[in-house]
Image (cartoon, rainbow, N blue to C red):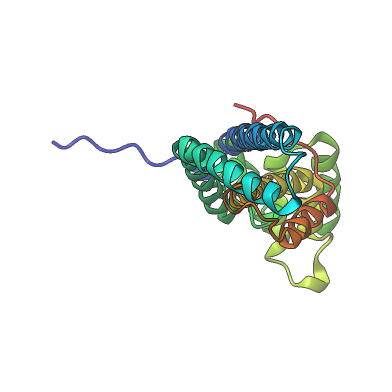
Amino acid sequence: MAQKKAPPTLTKPWRSVTDLKASLTRARELHSENAKRISEMNERVAKRREELRANLHDLSPSEQSHILNRALGGLRADLKRDSADARTARLRELDALRRQAEDASAHYHSPMQMLMRESLGSERRSRLIQQLEHSGKVELASLAALAVSSKDRELAAVLASQVGRMPHGERPFSPHELADLLVGDEHRAIQAAIMEVGELTQRSLLDDRQFETGRPVDRVGLALRARDRSALGAAELPDEED
């Protein structure tokens, strides 16, 4: 007889907060390394420029410019060629982290979505559903306050589900407000982390493009993304409990 496969777990999303936190940490490391290496190469070019200028003071400005452009162009070409593989590897890994983070965002659309997933299928949640099936509005409101004060997400998920089936005018509390009180801070931290991974990837791509071309690049879009993330006022991602 074929062995039955274990049912998939329902208590964790496709990509956990721990995984997302690890991705953010790695993205920060890659961005920092990319910025450091590009800065070092730019410093080499700047140092070489000063060395050449010190020996070209007897030449006319046009002659100095010609020699500098030729010498520095050769140095930049060597630096770009020698660093190409390492820069490409970092950018590819960053882009993979960005795509993973964006995929994970589907599981964190809202605090309500996160709350309703809490301990889904657990024995306690099943018992709570049965026990609260016929509770009145006063009791539900009292239990919601208890869930918030005790940070009981499992109880809050059951309450939000039950109240969510009631007509809007008869609800003793807003299930969305309850979800925000229980997991709103975590939701904002997750959204900020996903956004930051994207920002770090874009920032590294722009830094690399500027190094390749030797010309400034447009960073307005990047600044707007950073502003939107800052507006969340989110804390660092929490450590996920076992």
